[in-house]
Image (cartoon, rainbow, N blue to C red; front, side):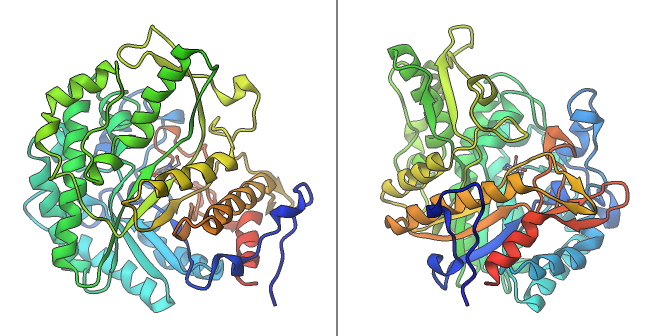
Length: 460
Ligand code: NOJ
């Protein structure tokens, strides 16, 4: 029998049922090594840039550290049982580079490999399909000391890491995601200084973008050559960018931000080279610095799927004070539109439009939503975590997804961000995205109402 979920405060068209997405649709959850594993120096793991960054004063809210995190390293069996119990069939996780190559290159840490073998085997045992993300933001600190993503050696390092992973796991793992949100880690980490390794300015941002573009395509080629039957993708963040007014200067400012948020990584991948907007001096400089015209072919790779992650829509106005970009955001709270605990605008229609827009590129074969979710302050009510806001969010976003799918966008799956509350980068442990609540002191897991909602939806 098909169970229909009806949320009281939604109009009728929000009726959702799983069957509508088709029998082959992949439903899953996603996590990431640096956010979930903890065990930062256990069994020979080397430090990552996040271990280092977290030691710096004032970088992470509440001076939170990722060292223990939510202890997925020791609790992976319980957490995978939760994935299963909630009715999902896909488990996406990332490999901590410094757990398997403590110095980033050179010596392989057998205990690190053994850990991921245990996770993969447990997934298969439970009937979960493992999706492995190669890079989800936790570069080995040893490589950062030699320049990290800004170093011209990056491609060589990444190739070696990828080879170690495909050799070790490629017999059982067939779904690979090369990079997670390259715009996120290059801009926040190498331009704005908000994420590890905390670099600011353009000097390191330009080469970081370039190296990420090369690793994205080269990583794809390497997995293709090494893993038989592999399905290969890479994951992009995307956000609809809306000009604050229809004044020309706001419209142009929105186009510049749109280029950075939505075009910079996919267009080179599709073989179109670096994107450009007339008068965007930052991109002029990037083209020249990176000798963009020489690399069109090397940045191209025919991915089997594109992972999309849409967390917010953004409204942009012209701001002459901001160097090169000359644009700034008009926050959702200022505009008094619905937003999450992160201050991110909730706008399912913009999610629908972004799915259609990436599909319209033409060269995209398949889209998978490799992360989707929201942080809200969870209300504890008589032992229950009543997160009605999150349920409402999923209902609206799934409805938008279904609309896009019905319109002909080839969408193969939806992965919830995230299974358990975890280390939310510079937000520490305050921002909670999980379907399962974690008490970070006791590590006690409690399924939230949104987790039960998903279970009912999936098991209908
Ligand atoms: C996308 C990132 O991939 C993930 O690591 C992060 O936690 C979520 N956004 C939420 O901010």
